[in-house]
Image (cartoon, rainbow, N blue to C red; front, side, top):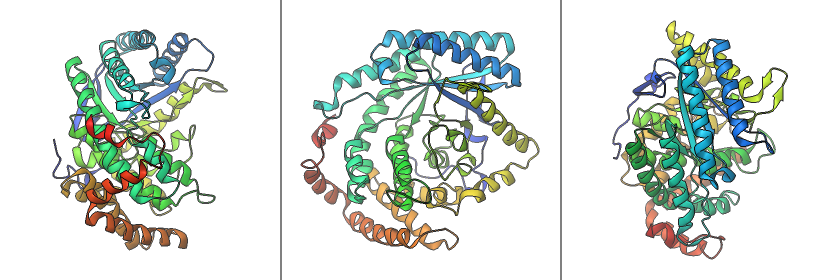
Length: 449
C-alpha cells in the first residue's frame, strides 16, 4: 500500500493521540489519549538468561504496582546469542508473558509486550545468508505463538555499503544504500513479517534505521569533536524515514519501534502510533534531540539498560520510574488540555540548536513528508526528501549552523540535485564501482531475492 497523502498537519501532530489507535496485550490502548511508558532492558552478562528475564520482568511489574502505573509496555530485544537457540527464546518469552498475565489479572494492569528479533544475517554470504533469514522468520513465528504482542526488528540490509559511505561523507553511496539496496531488503523482510503477524493475530510493529541513522547520529557526536557534519546526520535521518516507511507500506500497523527517531515521519504519513526515546536513552548514548522527540510519541521509551544494581534498585525498574514521571506529566497535560503547550516547549528547547533536532520538528516533518508521499518511487523520494530538508535548513535563520555545516549543505544540495536528475542510472552505475571497493557487497543478491 502506497501512502499518497499525510494523515496529520503540524498543528495536530502531538503526543498521545493517533488517528489509528491500537489495543492489544492485556487491554493496553496506545494512541488513544494516553502516553504509555515502554521499558527495555538487558540481562547481566554471565548470568542465567532465564533467571535474569524472570527477575527483570517481576521487578518491573512490582514497580508498576508500587507507583500506580496502569498502562505499560515491556520490550525484549533478542541478542545474537539468544537467536542461536530458539528453544531458549520460547522459554523466556513464555516466562515473561506468564508474569504479565498474572499481574494483569491480580492488579488490573494493561500491559503490552514487544519482542524485537535480531538481524543475524551475514550479508557476505551467498543470497545474504538464507540460513540466517530463515532462522529470523522461525523466531518471529515462535515469539508470536508464545506471548509477543508486537513484532519489531532493527534490520540491516544495505549497511555494508552505508558503513563505507558514511565515514567518507559519500552521498551517492548513502543514497545507494538507503534508497536502493535497503528498499529491496525491507520489502522482502516485511512481507514475511506481516504475513506471520496476521497469521498469529499479533501486531507487526515496525522497523528501525538504528543501524543507519543512529550510527550517523552517534558519530556526529556533540557540539564539538564531531566526525561527520550534523547536517549529514540529519539528512541520513530524513532518508531513513523513506526506508522505514516500507514496513508500513507492506502492512505494518505499529506501534513503531522506539529507537527509530524517524518514526515521527511515519506517524505523520500513516497515522499509526509510535514509540520514541530521547533523554531517557542517555543510559546508552548521548544525543542533541532529547526533548523534541517526545513531541508526538504514543509510547515513551528508554534505551536498553542492563539489569545492574543501582542505589534506587535495578537498572530497568529505575528507568521505568523515570519514564513513568515523564509520561505522567504528558498525560496530565492532556487532561488539562495544555498538551499542545507542553509539546511546543519540548520542540522549542531543541529545534534550533542543531539540524538533527530541526528535522524532527512537526512542521519540518510535515513539509518533508509531503515530498516523500509525492514521489513516484523509493529512490526518488529518498533523494528528494534530503534536498527538501537542506532547503528548509538553509532557509531557517534561527538554526545554528557553523560555517563548516553551511559549506557542507551547500555542497550536499548540489550533489543530491545531480543524483536526482537521473537517480536510477547514477546509482546502478555507482554500485558497479562500489562492489570492487566494499567488502561483502553483493548487489545481485539484493535484486534477486
